[in-house]
Image (cartoon, rainbow, N blue to C red; front, side):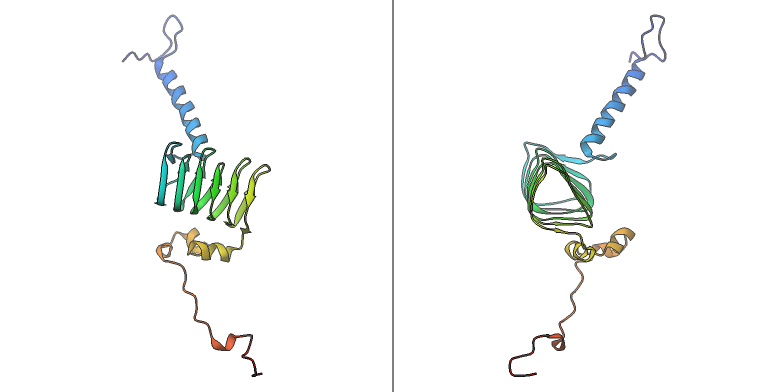
Length: 186
C-alpha cells in the first residue's frame, strides 16, 4: 500500500527491502526449528496424543505422544519439551527431549546433549552426544535394521515399489539343521 522502490529524498529505506529482510530472518528461524532446510509439521507443547501416529512428512514433537510413531520415509525430531512413550520408526531421528521405547531408523539416530533415551536404538548410524542420558542397547547391523523396518536398505535407497511390502518372509526351518539331536540318538 505504501511501497517505495528506493530510498526517498530523506534516506528512508523501502518497505519492500524491510519485508524481504524480515522474511529471510523468519526463514532462517524456521530452518533452525525444523532442523533442516524444509518445513516440518509440529506437535506443540500443549498437545497430547495417545495411539498410533503415522505420516509422510517431517515431524517435530514438542508435546506428549504415547503409542506408536511411524514416519518411515520422513525425519522425526523430538524437541526439548517433547516426551515420547512409543516405539518410533522413521527415516532419521533426532532426540533433544525424552523417549521411552525403541527407536528404529533407516538412516541415522542422533541423541543430543540433555536428551533422555530409555530403549533400544536400531540404525546404521548412531551418535550420542556427551551429556545425554541413555539406557538400552544399540544395534547398527544393517540386517537388523532391515528386519526391524521390514525392508532392505537397497530397496530404501532405490525407492522401488517394494517399499510397500511387509517384512520379508522367514524360510521354514529344516529338521536336518537341528544341532542338538534327541537324547539317545547319535
